[in-house]
Image 1 (cartoon, rainbow, N blue to C red):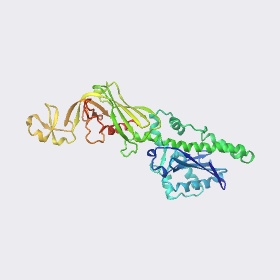
Image 2 (image 1 turned 120 degrees about the vertical axis):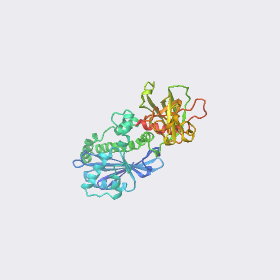
Image 3 (image 1 turned 180 degrees about the horizontal axis):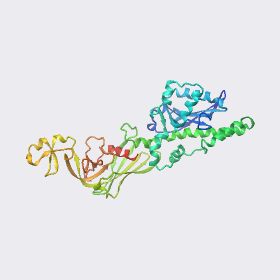
Image 4 (image 1 turned 90 degrees about the vertical axis):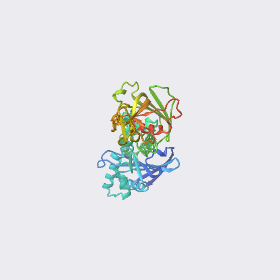
Length: 405
């Protein structure tokens, strides 16, 4: 750790080694600056900014921490200038609750000292779309209920993935510590040094903690429905099952490891016909780079509704639809023009529900009980079939993962 004094402000730098999944970063890791501030209160008009800390990638699994620490409130302007100068070299800013607190506080202090951020910095600081300024509190909020967290503060997420902090204080606790530090600077320098360590340590651990929380974003990427998500299902396999079984399990591999084993469930909106199902939920287990998805299996006769119904005829006596080219040979008294609700073929077999509805996979037919049903089903291959479903299972799994958020 290196200390340097610049006028009335101390600059402290440190380098750490930490392996993180690049896929979980919202943009290239080397283009993102993480930051956190420490203040003597919530209101920028009635409190002082005494510490700005940043951390950024500086090599393979290397990250550099920079902290600007104020000996007096007169250091605020210099700290702000140093922070903006550093931000100028990055395309994105990452923080925890920064959209609500840190950034408005910084901008208010800039106004106080008539500091005008460059257009580049202003574009990042004013972003509310999560494309240049990434608030990890907002990114992780959808996961809080799923994983059973009571609050969702940064320390809660750190504990969730097993991160042990050396720091034991909250930002509010340290307001009095900073006040006492200022009083001890001249009369009790040894005590002041110990308190300075506590102040720097809290910010230091917040910065490193934010880096660790990037790993939690892997869950969010896996559970998103966006096609362009960098965290993907690489392979999927239908595990051995028995004919007529009540559930099927699909194992799959992940392109990015998750930091902790989780087991979660998601409800299935069953139509009336299936509400007696013994298993009513999807079950998902994720551990490292592997996943298991357990889905209720139904043995029923369902219908595949053909989209191009205008080119089909419905045969009431056979309860099926056939193409017009074949229907030419059927007596007109035994056929009628198909509608969207009658243009179907029937299939009896084992099916698994697709809670997400349609699946983006060429060649995969989805079946329904009735035309307007929201719940669709995919037909499982026969147990003796050579087709193990591997061609469509990754797309099926990816679609179902989006139902857990």
